[in-house]
Length: 354
Image 1 (spheres, rainbow, N blue to C red):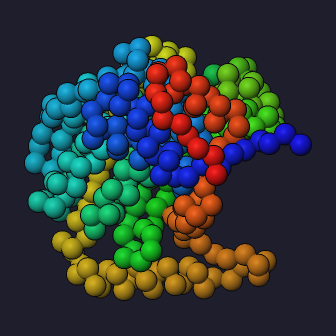
Image 2: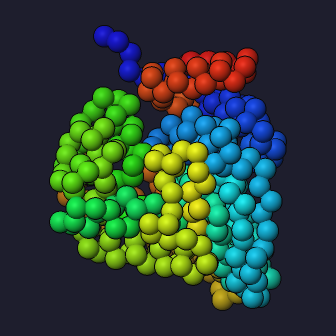
């Protein structure tokens, strides 16, 4: 039977992706963060947002839709609140700058809230919320997305699947990380199903007329459905207000999706927040309270005794440990696409298979 997947070592994949970004005219430090963010996402098991997106990111960097060397600057400032202009840079780099600044503000003023305009797709929101948790603060990250979600019963998309993440330090093996988009699934999961030649559930997406479909290629050209019906739809509206509207960026139909407009900046907006826990509670006390919290969650019984109650971020941690040991699985056609991309760019680095 023909092999559908190959396994690659995370360190080799990181080196490979970093080299490709450097060849796309990115500075070494930015290329390293961008590459690390994608490989980490694969390590967490969120394959829809990892190196699957690399060919499109590179295409946008080369076309000028995404500025490989953005001049990110503060355009609005009011003590603990700031807005950055991302200069059409990669969302990962703009998001990193915004969260770093939010953490700096939180360490000075106990809370920091930094918006960013003129950015692009930033990968997984959890990347940035985790940055704050690693610094001992609570992190919140969110972004608006081009209209790709249709309201239940609607025939045209009305809002993006606007993801957000919340990360809280637990002082254990991994932080608490809630990282979700507000569609039933991300567009990347539909793309991944297409790469694997699989059907999708009918509540994932619709055709271009808003009617549910199990064909990932039809759904990818159509729309996503909101998670939780109107509840998810309403939260997506709230994220849009917190990102595009509040920051002074564009919103709703003024955005440009990277698939439909591969040669144009997306004009995406983000919002990053950091909260200094030590301002209201001693670290040891908070650590003990988080320990009590996680222990109570873990102790909650399951009707299937073979299953365990987990906290957000735990599955990703377990997946990371497994993939660091056994390798990251890549669909064969994606692996071939990545190695072909390197060849086209004149890169000699190969991506060895385990």
